[in-house]
Image (cartoon, rainbow, N blue to C red; front, side, top):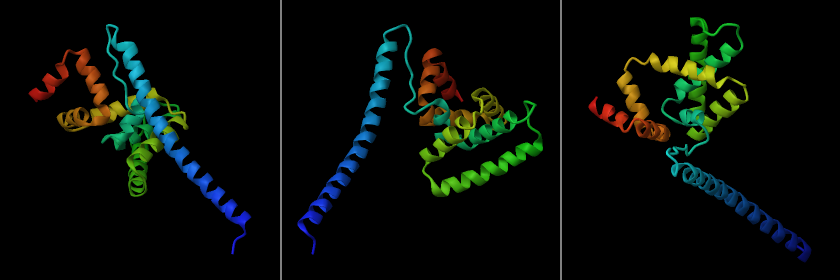
Length: 188
């Protein structure tokens, strides 16, 4: 049997736990709401000018790429960038490219078994690229070279246009080119 004091402590512990759970839910809700409000504020600030704002719903362009169907290629570019960062040349030997490919395949397989897509994207962008101080410019150069090597450029183009993670970029390009991207894509 519990004393009245022990029962009071137990009830207080349960109340504190309930409050903590509510705080966590509120924090998550607050973050989503704050992010949505920030996007609306930016759109309102810029859309009245002779420009139009296209804002990622996600963290950054790199994070959006890491969320996309191109995450494996992007991760490959990040690891290539890391190898370039640690060398005195701006290109990789075939041997180093093979090492990168093996690590990419191994990590992606492991991550896909253990994590959701958002966690994988966070690992690639935050924990490897940002914390590793890997140059965004070098990663972008490596990524563009990887994309140029695609055997079917029309397939790559379709991936980019149809992937919701790139919607804001595609919309911005379409807006800036007066719809030329859509016309060109639909003609293929």
